[in-house]
Amino acid sequence: MQADSPVRSNRGRSNRARTEAMRARLVDAARRLFAEQGFAETSTPDVVAAADVTRGALYHHFSDKRALFQAVVEQEAAMVAAEIETAAGSGGDPIKALLDGSRAYLQAMQAPGRTRILLLDGPSVLGRDEIDRIDADHAGRTLREGLQDAIDAGALAPLPVSLLASLLSAMFDRAALSVDQGCPASEQMAVIEAIIRGLEPNGNGRPGL
Image (spheres, rainbow, N blue to C red):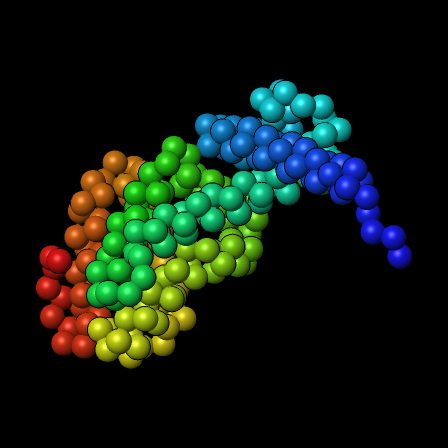
C-alpha cells in the first residue's frame, strides 16, 4: 500500500487544526455566555453570534445546546483539576499537598461563572450521574489520589477512600458556593483544614501549617 503523500498528510493535519480551532471557538464563546447568562437564558443563536460562525458550523460540532454545554463543563472541570495538581505538587508532606490542593480548588472556583457552570447549571442540565462522572475524572480524581497518598503514608486514618472522597467533595463544593456568595475563602479554608487535620491518626484537628 502506498503511503500518504506529504501533501495529503499536511492537508489532513491542516483540516484537523481548523476543526479543533472552530470547536474551541464555539466552546469559548458558549462558556462566556453560560457564565454570564446561565444555560436557560443562552440560545444557540446567541452562541453563533458570539463566536461569529454559521449555525451550520455549530451543529457540525455539537448536536444541540446540551452537548455544547457538556463540552464547556468538561473543559472547566479539567482546568480546575490542573490547578489543583499544580498546587499540590508531588512527593513531600501528603497533608500539606491536600491542603494546598484544597486552597487551589477554592481559588480555581472563583473564576467568573465557574460555580454557576459546574455546581448549579451542571447538575440540573446534565444530571447528577453525569456531573459525578465528570468530577470523578478531574477534581474528584485528584482528591482520591491525594487521600490515598496520605493514607498510604500513615498521615490519615485508614478510611474507605471512595466514601471519604465523596463526602469531602460535597464539602468542597459547598465551600465554593459559599465563597461565591461572599463568604471569605480564608474562613472556608480554616474549616476545611480543621476537618482534614481531624482525620489524622491522632485526630487532634490542629489548624495551621
